[in-house]
Image (cartoon, rainbow, N blue to C red):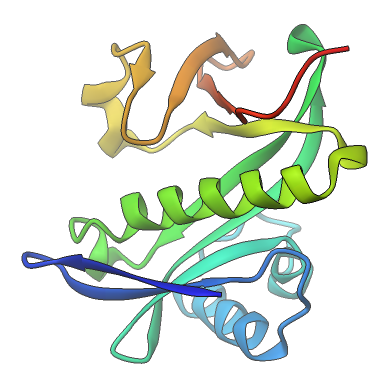
Length: 170
């Protein structure tokens, strides 16, 4: 599955699905991406993080953005969410690659959740740490990504979630 996002200001991005596919080529590109940028937290190996890939964005054959997720239960919401982590090459931070990747990722995970109801994934979640999103932090709901503010971490970062349409609480 691939999708191309067209934006005259940004050019074209090729979004590719990786969620639970063990795609060796995409994993190798992501490992190289993380090593080149040196952006993974201490103690996290690129090889381990590559097993959590959801989707990636390419431009002109090069990997420019990655999205990974871990499925975790948010007790205060009584539901399981695919908690998203994303990274964008600094040269593409203002290119809209991240927004296109977020939309592609949400759609991909929602369709996967619908096809695998026993997994009980209620939606997509994220902990917002990126300083460039500071201007948008006051908005309780982000229509473009459907992420709504639901709480804060102990260190003050926002927790945002987007419920999948088909999910129902027991």
